[in-house]
Length: 248
Image 1 (cartoon, rainbow, N blue to C red):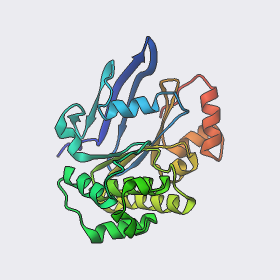
Image 2: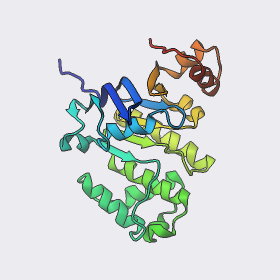
Image 3: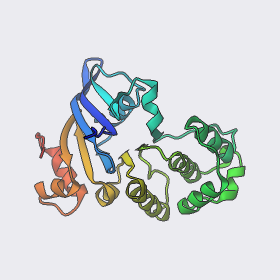
């Protein structure tokens, strides 16, 4: 029987800055075909963890693998696409030029039909792709970034605050697209967000980080049940006030 390789596996990650521990022995794994949400307040270690996952920052201890390959290996990046929270592509490129360049990194060709179809789903006017990115609004720029990661069709998509800058209609479309992304082709999504209602709605499992500690790993339903709350927001508020970790 073939071994199933996890899209993302993090083991015992620890990171300190000036003797202050930002991440404390964090371990988690993301299963194939699921949407996995990472939540926590600002400054508790979420961004640091994402940077370590992407090999943009070195951990003090621990390891991270993509599909069984160490994240420091160039080969490991062939299977992932990433959209940062602060997405600043070159303002001197047109939208089409940016997409063509991004797709070339993934050994894919630019396809007008596919681009037009996905742009329409995101509510991005196909015609604006002929314009320089410097003329885009924040929302248009965010949609361009999302368009790029969906076009790449990577086995693992990593998104940092993907709902940022989107209007309610675009948020609904994005959630539907993410759900379709995992169900139609068994791909995987890992993302962070402050919009906990979105996390609750589409995530199969979540990880909650507080003060550098992983305090919960499991389903949103179990998290809410533990704190006897109907909303993820209220359960989260209770969780960060307690000094405890909850694991299945």
